[in-house]
Structure formats: C-alpha cells, structure tokens
Length: 107
Length: 117
Image 1 (tube, one colour):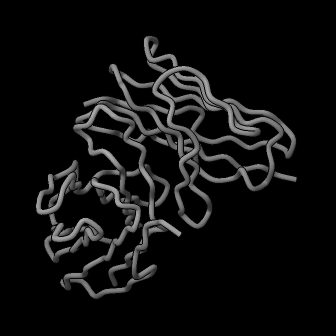
Image 2 (image 1 turned 180 degrees about the vertical axis):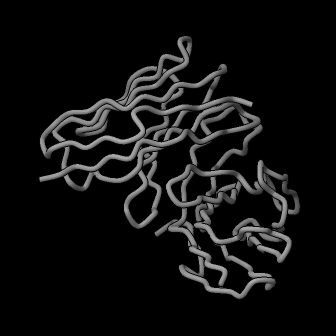
C-alpha cells in the first residue's frame, strides 16, 4: 500500500515564528487533507488539497501531486497551534494517514 | 449544529469484556469510519461503511465488529478477541464514500478513550 511519511517528526517553535511541515507519499493520489489534532485529541480538518495551493488565514498548503509531496505552512505561530499535524492521502479506494508532526509553540 | 457525537468519552473495562462505542452523525453523510490511535502514533483504519447495511474491513479489523443499520449510526464493538484494546478511538464521516470521485473530506468526532484494566 501507499507509504505516507511526514517531516519533521517533532518541532519546537517560539511564538511568532514560521514553519513548514512536509508530507511525502509513495504513489499517485487524488485526495490529500491536512488535519490538526489538538491536545484533547480532536481532529480538525484544515485543508482538502489534492493539488494546487490554498490559504486560510495564517495557514496555507501546497500539493505537488506529480512530485508526490504536500507542504503545510504556518506563519506567525501561536500557542494554540500546538498539537499534532497529520496528512491523509490516497485514492478513491483507500486513504492512509501520515506519521504526523508534533508541534510545540512556546512563549 | 451538525456534527459527530461519540460516547462515552472515557470507558474503563475489565479484560475479557466486550464493549460498544457509539458514533452518531447528523450531517447526512453517506460514509462512516472507525480509526484507532495508540499513544504517540498515527491513525489506523478499523472499519468503514459507505452505505447502510454494508461495511468493509480496514487495516486492523481483527477483534472488532460493527453494524450500520441506520445512516446516522455506526457503533463499534471491541470484543474480547482484541488482544490490546486500550487506545483512543475516533469516528469519522464523509459525504461521498471512498469509491466516489468527488471530494471525500472527513469530519471527526471528539473520540472515545478506552482503557482495559
């Protein structure tokens, strides 16, 4: 099956810093989503982005499906951005979660 | 407000007992899913259902059972055959199912944390 790797696995930032999270996948996909899991376990969908670029406030995402990767940008990070970020990707028949990036934003 | 309700939020059970986790959605979504998350790990698919009265095994279905008698409900039973059931369980739903070419965007419930003593 498809392999989905995220990097870095862990990231510590000071409030106000910018960061880039990466999701690499091993096969062709037509579905890619980014989620934020907060410290209480709730998963929130950030983007549905099988290709192209989208922006939502301080967050933006880019997927280059032909090169098999997606990037999530967080600008001017805040402590509420802390948690784990997952990508979910695959095709119509199967979706697979990535390994996750744990982000901690400090004051 | 539309959403997914999982209950109970926390559940403690003795080894060897079956437990059933509830998942109810009022989003009118066709597809529903159950995922398992172990501490510090990603999510793994247990079962999914694209329509009422139909469901398919995911990657780690052994020791679990589901039913889909109503569109709104997709309960998960953790049986005594599941060797290590202590985990965080997440239910999700989406409008089209996995076989659709449409945008299959998942919405998640708040999760149920099961601890087997």
